[in-house]
Image (cartoon, rainbow, N blue to C red; front, side):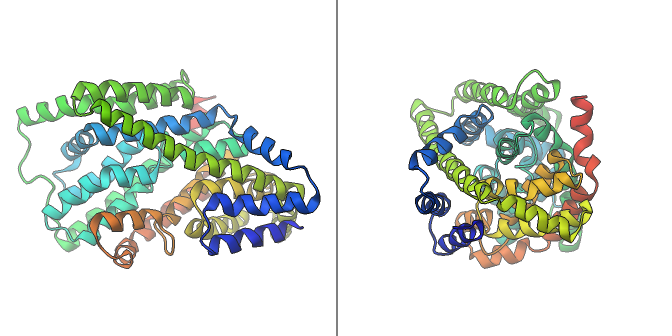
Length: 426
């Protein structure tokens, strides 16, 4: 049973609608049976893949996002972002983008951003007569920032798969995320002038209003500040930062008195469910990737790619095409774990830095989350705003120009990604 047959069976199961974990686990199990390899190898490999200290950060950041959504922290972050950019033309659309960046500094996931801020942002925008599809489109596009700005669950998973420093990866995502935010804000500013969007706040904040917003929002704003300071200073690992963030979120939740004990237990249960769904994919991908490695598929792909060209820019074009296509159909965690051992070796041989490629990979896959036919962020927004999926895909299309321009910058100007981690970590 060759590596190509394993991949083909995986694709057939995906198209048949099987959950991604089973689509990877079944071909791997069949391979073991056909080759006469003990099933205990499968169990050992799956368990060993979860025995990873960096992966402990995943449930912690999931829980932090859950606490924010259940305790009023998200509302305070939105108000704080409104104070910063609400006076601009198309202010609430700009607030949407800035709030996504701030929320990204805690949740580390695009769907958490959409689920946590989506209702608040879209409700506020529709009250100011924004079309629902336009409000949903801005929300979907801005949520792409989440998984490249630290903390990032996909970057942590990539770090484990690529055996690369998670800390370097997280720091590497800072400048690319800021570039994406600036370009999105410029595009929204253009749309605001063209479509005559209103200001987010018509009247200037009075001094007392500013003090009130700061009083309500600053404790919540300290979450991303603590997180970023801890990582950039080198005092904390990503996992330790996750633990500190959860502790701080619990303190804030009870300080704001908007989270009951029952609500806290619900957050814990939701965290367990979300973590289980992520980690079963990690475990299945581990044995799936191992079977491909045994069949030397990564080496074969390396030979093919290096035969086409040894130029890193050409290979990065090929990798971008593969990743953008994969992001349209395959769940992010699975795509990272399956494609990293296949694409990374030839790129390293061509001189591409694995940290740089990690940010490129995750950003490609995030664009896939708003791309048909399987744009998970768009499907989630469709249920929130009660609009057909096609309407939102159509509304989000103009933002692909900005996102693809950002991708080109991140891909072909490596120092955008590498300068900060190289400076901070010598």
